[in-house]
Amino acid sequence: KIIRGISNAAGEIGHTIFEPNGRTCVCGRNGCLATYLTESGLVDICQEAGYNVKNMHEIMDLYFKKEPWAVKKIEEFVGSISILLCNMIYTYNTKFVLVGGSIISDYPIVYDLAYEKLKDMIHDNLYLDVIIKSSTQRKDSVLGAAYVAQNEYISELIKNHGEGIG
Image (cartoon, rainbow, N blue to C red; front, side):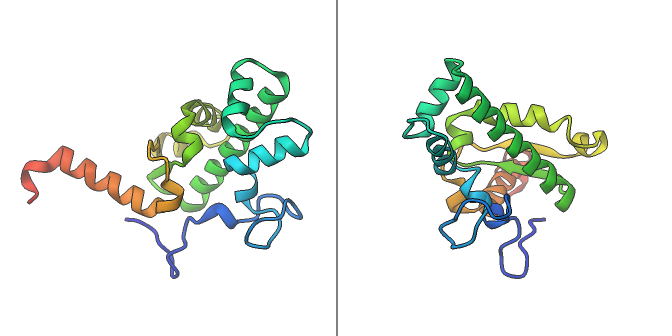
């Protein structure tokens, strides 16, 4: 069952406060998750720290080249994703979590690293019970997680039980 909430906004985490009194968001509030755990957020954070990068590709390229500051920023970024996943699992106690967006589809290592860190943050029973998947759809955040989850669920139904549907 997809949890939608009374305003269809359940799971809309981009504008939850991630850092009190933090960076200013396009919504006008300060500290929204969207200003930290997005490509533009990470690029801005790196630029504010004095690093001359224009996009996620440059940051990841430096990460793979083991540039110390890029490794540190990606490790912090991945750690924050892991904390977010942990909090969502404890809050919603759901069977499925779909992680998507352009960073996850373009740089699967980010998902892999976050998933590994999550193991140390969550109780074993929850970790073993939840199914966490990454999506390859680049525009998941635009389409909405509920749509993507529903689409994946229906695809699995058809794949596993297709002959009885129709």
